[in-house]
Amino acid sequence: MVFEWEGFSGGEVLMHDPTVWVTSTLHHMHEERPVPIALYSRDGWCRDFAIKSLQQRGLDYRVAYTSDTNGGLTLAVTSGLAIAPISRSNIPPDCRELTAADGFGDIDSSNVVLHRNPLAAGEAIDGMEDAIREAFMLTRQAQATASL
Image (tube, rainbow, N blue to C red; front, side, top):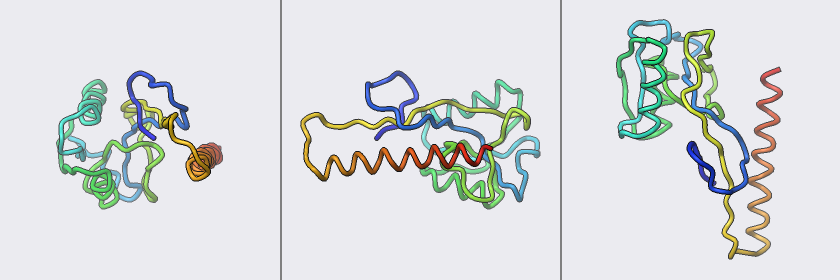
């Protein structure tokens, strides 16, 4: 499985999973100006797209925290230190997506894509492929139910 945000490699798309700004439901850091943000330490497309999304909306920001991992960004949000770019499927409990109504919106768009080695075969591989596909089907169903 891979996240593809640009182009399409020919695998099976299991889920569309945009990266969105996330805030704690307890701390409301998105209301501060400049808005405190948590970003990945390394330069890359996620960091670039996140900053660009704020600039396009004319939002003043300050980098309050950096981390090498998604877990670090999640901790920054849940502790009330900052808002952070997190994939919609990974929004932690007691947090929520910041939408256009909040003055934010999607940062980027990516797909979760399943690739299988055409040379690999066997019952275990077939079972793993089916389990992954089923897990994503259940995730999509849960998201659809939550949005009702």
